[in-house]
View 1 (tube, rainbow, N blue to C red):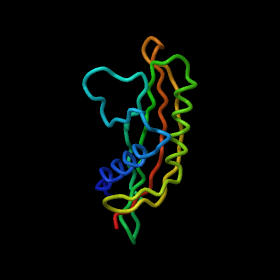
View 2 (cartoon, rainbow, N blue to C red):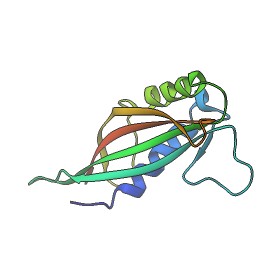
View 3 (tube, rainbow, N blue to C red):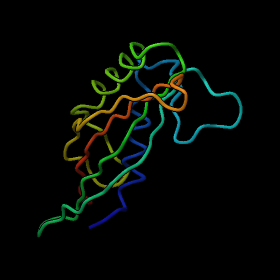
Length: 133
């Protein structure tokens, strides 16, 4: 197994999303910067990695989370943004700085209210299979 492709995968996902016109103006963060938090933002979050190496290559499945967080009323806006993210990543042909992306697919989503219910969060989970070539 190798975890060595995790930084390259995260960078490719971030660059792909940041470059999409449909996401122009959406705050996309690895970690929230100090200061005021936008009403709606997306964070690159937790990741679980499983070995998928075989006799020919070292590889892994990276199950990673993108979270849409909003303090705006209702889930409609957050779901629309989540759908845009899902469409943008499903089957995307990302180029990694190291290794290669074999496939990228949507796995599941969870929508919930946080705290007093004023904050809504949708966690989108994707699975990326990568090989270290």
